Image (cartoon, rainbow, N blue to C red; front, side):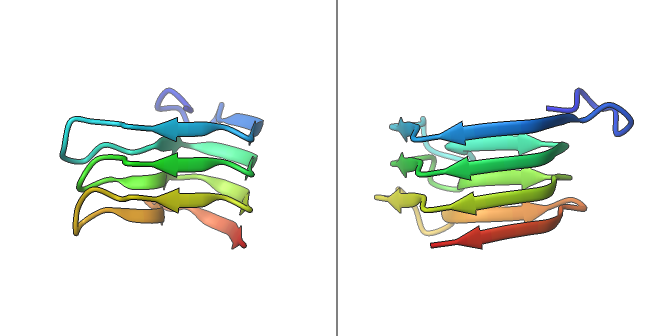
Length: 96
C-alpha cells in the first residue's frame, strides 16, 4: 500500500505461491488487495472463496505489474470477479 502518497509507492513486491481462502463475511471482500503498488509480481497464487462482491485480486492505482499462473476458484457471489485493475492502474499484464 502506498499509504495515500503517490510520491512514495510500495514497489518491487513479489507474492508467490500463496493460498488465500475463505475471505469473508459476504460483501466486497478481496482475496489480495494492492493499492498504489509499482513494479510487482503475483505468481502461482490460488484464491478461493472470497467475498460475494469482491475480487480475487483487486488493484487500485497500481503500475507495472504482472499476474501469472494464478487460480481463482469458488467465487461466492454473482458480483465477484477474478482480477480487477482500476483507479489509474496501468501497464498490468495478466497471463495464464
